[in-house]
Image (cartoon, rainbow, N blue to C red):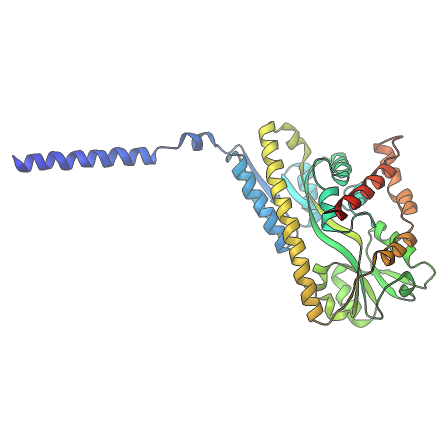
Length: 361
């Protein structure tokens, strides 16, 4: 009898454990609702760690905030193709989202993303590029819409300075007879041409990948560059002086196929926006911190760094003659898309306000 009772007790315990295990294996009601509706890929041709970590954060947050309805996979370092190949793939819809440099051969209004003497600090950039009301965000969203994209958020690489092997550059006259490397970015080229006008400075278009050798062999004396490129591309090894002029700003854009965006329900659009804002904030903080670390490394390596005063920067800015550059490069596109609104002046006036606001922070 005692044995029979014991068996009943053991059997009851087993039944309880079995019932509990069944309940534990049963799908959670919330998880059951989180069926994957969209399997997306995010492409990037670049290898920069700070940016890639921020984009990975964005993808993870998007998966979370969509409650699993969007499943985003990040493919960086050119795994989905070159920069231009990825751009065209997103445009046609075979890839859903990516990060791009808006070169004008791809985005006709892309020059507005990084016109010289518009943004010069992380504080200014966070306001001007910030969605949904930043002046550069709004105009670049229009530029991307023209080619079938929806702009989501932007990723900074920081301010440009001027490096060379000959002398410190403290005023426009110090550009005298320097041979400087430039790219095909016409806004940068026109601005630099004007800053060096009358000094005998010459400009040469050289591929970025060839710049180190060109500096090392004396083909050119210097070039514009970022704190990141000085360290990561080892340009500090073949330069002697660097002026932190902060005359231009490097910023790339995260955008997705516009037709896909338009078809999404509002809650998923909200999830994308929320994830983007958090990833963008992280990107700004980490990029700025990395720049400060790079500055210390460059000083320790012996690079002569000069930071101009406000008056000295203004001398370069004035000589750059940016109104004429805007009239040549930006006004035709702006007039086409904002007819009769004098949009160039509105943008520049708004950027003046951004500088004042950022200076108070």
